[in-house]
Image (cartoon, rainbow over all chains, first blue to last red):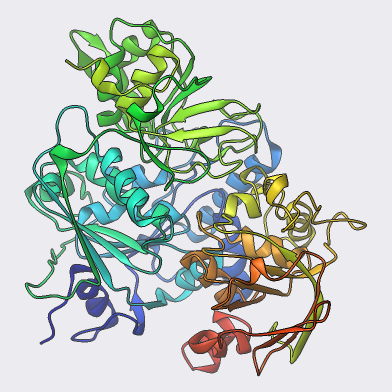
Length: 435
Length: 190
């Protein structure tokens, strides 16, 4: 039997064949299809147009609908789109819908999916959002698709995919306290470029990866798309199983999959974690790499801590550890990814103070769980860059116009670097505050 | 219905590298639903509206994508550099180009999800080129493409370029997208 990478093995199993090779086009069975308020209405339109107005989704328990993008806005069209989701869920009787204004509301889909037990090792997850690749952190194949593909999957549970060759990134050593997963992935993207992994799988390996908690692993996989990657993946270990088993409400069985010894990688790169430094991606591309130190003194107008890649409890704990007892010098926006994270801000403590209290005392503003200003959105979106200002952000993209105004400048960095920069009003290496 | 024609002819609008989906259709306009025909049209109006002015319509830049008609652009071709369509999975991006009247994109290569969306949705015809044509063709040049021969003629300069064949996605584009293709292959009941 051919030696395969983790990604190839999952795809072979879901195509019902003993083995696959990179470049091969295959039809695979999908385990979970996720959509949200921005792409859901278009997906539902494609589904109905092609399968008929009375068609039913292929499997009720495999379609997950998570409104998260344009939630806390007065925009009528945005609210109309959530209504389209509601109507569809009712008509189809879908059990997994995390509706706005109810106790079930979650926030950002990529964090909501694992929190609610929709991610499992060895599975195939497709979602109408490019950051669906986040779920590779659980040892599964996860990638983003468009409305047409999603409408197709919705009706028949299958999709054609090209098997990607796998790139392997090996991290030696454990992270020092001034580095976070965001620094690792920004370093990788800076090195290979924002097209460096186009059509390829990115597998993360080594002690530097396996010493990360599950949230940090999600940050790593979240941004493979910023290098053009099809999926990012980390082999499951006890950290993965502990998390999955505590969340797998449906108790669905799963089969962990691992890369075979001798499997072929199309590219290999190794990093000594101890030699890396806090990284910042300058405007207007995630691969425009600089070290935080090199940008020392660069004035900023705003700091933003939030999104699927930078709005988890680990991110806020890191930021709060620096901000505790200090005040911010620029407008600082804190946006929890999900309602569970928002609750965590009220319960998790640093030196006896809740994270929420630390942020409020520092002078930051806290928003409600959603994608918020990460992708701009309607003009009344919390934290949106409505002016051509300069922002340092824990989010994942800084293309022109991404956070609102097309002449605004966005610098991407870890929550530690963003917090340190908020405290000084200039881009600051967090080592200046970590002795 | 397939968007592949034997010939394409029209003006080129030239862009650079890494034109991402936020530049193609900014997120604030994603509230329109492409499944509703009157709203589909709106995407044409805002297509390419976040491309920085200096990079809009190369080599000079500062060339508006729309002129007389606010919804439909006078250009039929987009010629771009590397990694066209990178960023988000929003199918609103190829929708916006289609709604604006773009029939063919010629880039060095595409970001994966954008390419899938173009092909599976059957919105337009995505050609790849070994040449860096975004530095050889100017915005406003009149182009003619002979599809089967993948021969691109710049009628303004009389230069001729050979594009890469469409390859394995050609049957899906010929069929008009993944649904008609899957039906023709017996994967879906019609």
